Length: 285
Image (tube, rainbow, N blue to C red):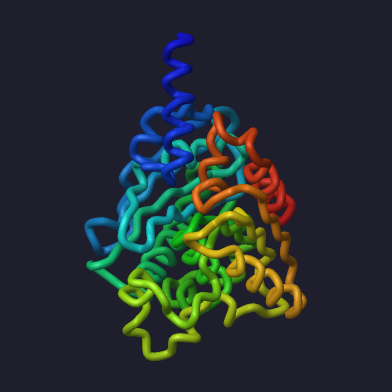
């Protein structure tokens, strides 16, 4: 047992240093007590569009519903590598959906947002049968997934097109997210957003308004992949507009840190899980 725990700790430390090869991390990290109640559920017309659902280990709800979008520069990621995150969030009292979405080169902006809106539609349609309360729905994500969550929460077009009342989103949370990244200055953003006719409309910061859903925005101060200024700028724009926002900046933390800190062995490094879920619960009570 000691040897196994030692290996897990060593692998977790290695993953933390190397921005977390998520498949490896997900395979070895200890999981929170929760139940996967739905696996591989299709929610759209493309083969990739499937989702998993996690529920708290005990009880029958009704629980608030959380749709979590993983990151990966819009060209990588698989929901099966984030089951540990789904379980971590479910253990905090949320019926948690983890959907896949189309990635580059199969799609570019706004295809992945359209996919995310379809996942929210599935949540609204099916959550109640699983013990969730679709009237208390929140969005969350990390990195590119934080962008997806922010855009779906702030820009009404995508949920409306999916047949969902945008007001169903009670709050959203973004970890290490890109929210204000013009001019496009990297291969990732050029290939993902470069074809957009209206580049300012691709930015979450463009949609800050007084009636925006309450936002929890967190970043590591040492993030060199998605600069902390993204979080600072969106938080400032929301505050200036009169919206509710809670901003957290963690010293000595790089890009993957807030995401990895959702896991059982690493959450003692920073309180992001408790702070994020506490915020989301306050806005779904």
